[in-house]
Length: 369
Image (cartoon, rainbow, N blue to C red; front, side, top):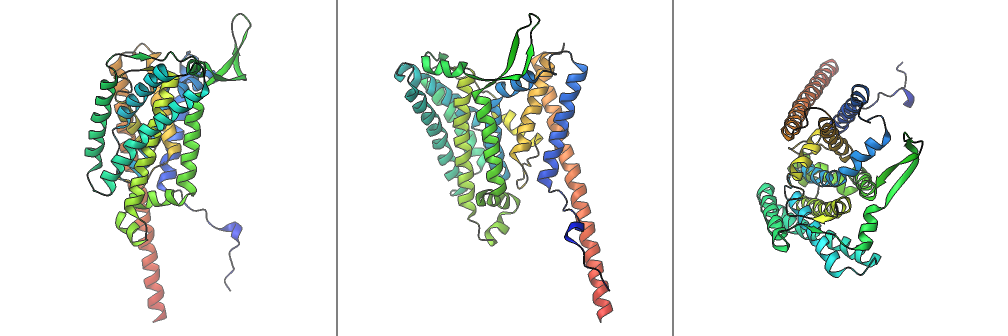
């Protein structure tokens, strides 16, 4: 007589491709950071070093999340850097020309301006990609040139923010005393986290919850995995892709505002190649260019891996710019190869398991007959 299996003895479901690649990214970041603590005497053991990585790369983390969402659908958005430049320049000029002293209203209106610019690019590009079915690379390439051109029209020279209230916001930092350190003179120096870093972490959490639990998030994965199957399931593919680009545009506008908080100056040359860094962070975090696989938590650690590499190289004798490019290229190639190997092995095991199940079914069918 067959025994009924207890729910406590059920086999654990295997990790999905998204989860597997995310945990690999987290593990590599932890190993890299631990190695920096052990082999480099450069302050990596202090919590402030980790917070500095967050503070300096808050805008990159946000646009990496923006790229991840559209990449999961099988698209791309290379206009992110241009939108950041345009947003930072427009917000700097607005604060200097229309700012009212230290009034918080000016800062709030500036945030709305940043989100409005990002929303405009998101709606336009989303419509062209989803409803007119133009290749996303071409659409967002045109968006990048448009944003860069508009930035230059606003001002060819750098524009420093002089608004008192905004400069106070720039200087505002969250102080964590118990994670600080004691200076040689005996003074306690608390760990400091900028507002932009807090916003970036909040974006990661919000996007992760949306992709995991919201209906829209499930539709994004379905569309990226197989559009034909998504259509057969009743998913509005065009609307899903459209809203993915809208959210991506909003996040790019927010990233421009966060960038201005970190460096209060608009410049036509800021955020150059940031879209390439964001794509690299997404891929290192486990997002596939083919779509259907990805997670913003992995993207966060992908951005932190790039930031850690940059910091390690800056603190080492090999601090020339080309070493940074070479290290990023090598890391990106390594993760692409790693993704291919992992997914190939998992798919092979899945095919083997399916073949065994088919053989068992055939045997049972033969026994019955």
